[in-house]
Image (cartoon, rainbow over all chains, first blue to last red; front, side, top):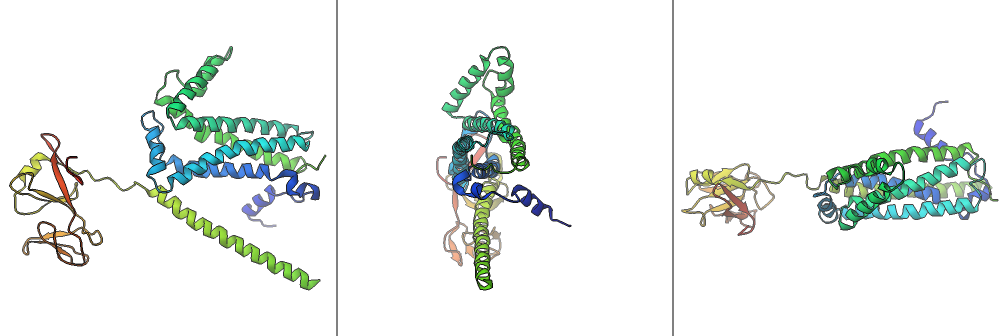
Amino acid sequence: MKRDSLVSLFEHIHPGYVPETSARISFTFCLGGLATTMFLAEILTGALLMLYYYPSISSAYPSVQRIMYFAPYGFVFRNIHYWAGQLLVILVLLHMVRVFLTGSYLPPRQLNWVIGAILLLFVFVEDFTGYLLIWDERALWAWTIARNLTDRIPFFGKEFALVLFGPPDVSDLSLVRLYAWHVLILPAIMFFMMSLHYWKIRREGGISIPL
Amino acid sequence: MPHESMESNSKRSFLKYLMVFVSGLIGVFSSWGIARFVFSGTRQKVDRTIPTELFKSISSGKPYFIPHAEVWIVKGSNLSNSIALDDRCTHLGCRYKWNDSKGIFECPCHGSEFDIQGHVLRGPASRPLKSLFLAETSEQILRISDHPHN
């Protein structure tokens, strides 16, 4: 049977059947799907913001101002990016609470729970790096505090801080590194883990049935 | 029973078309916004400076076009009574030309005519040519700007 690959993808994401009890909105509140939607909104608006954002100490803040006040609809895209980021944290946390209360973390789904928990961590880091990229006074001191905290981790703290934040002195390099984490490395890992998350839901029998 | 299923089918297909229509509408409007955002500020900014030496070499009484600054210079006896005119017609933004034999500026697009000071002699343009201010920023550079003392 010949099949369009797009149709095939669509049908892979959507399960063949869903138990009636699990299909009720009040069972899942669509929280995972909403979180995915927010993630896609972040990718889309983030790609647009990248056209004007300039990761250097002297130009980062002015470039954000330019997006907000000069580029047409720039404030719309940045506000969507900002609020989708805030909502993502709330939605992912609520999703986690839902999964916990419905016992969906129980075997055989225990590994998917761990993947989800790691994804929550990545959402936090994404929000934090986004907060720093604005590079206003708040961001500068948040960067300093975060770097010093990481630096004090026993045994491997110094190396870890170097990998995450770059050299200890603030320079253009610090922002370039944050930028790389924020726009490419973390989203790529998150995309891979989300695909795994979805794949494992299907593999482990779809949405769990109520306890 | 068949009647019932037909009814729900037409309801379903109506909702489907409505959804496609609404998302198409949203798609068109957001693409328009995205396009405006993407293309903003991509027009190159004009470098409105000229070397003082070039200004000195211009003969007075006849407009002189400076392509990179996109202005016509009409030189007077000194800097303060010299004028710079933006090279776009005030009607629809075409580049006008100086007609030496008639002694007027002519727009090739719709035939507007202006005198050497930029005043309208013939429509469709209704506003005079945009005149700019000349100022000496250093010994070598003259700046042409929209506002005086800038």
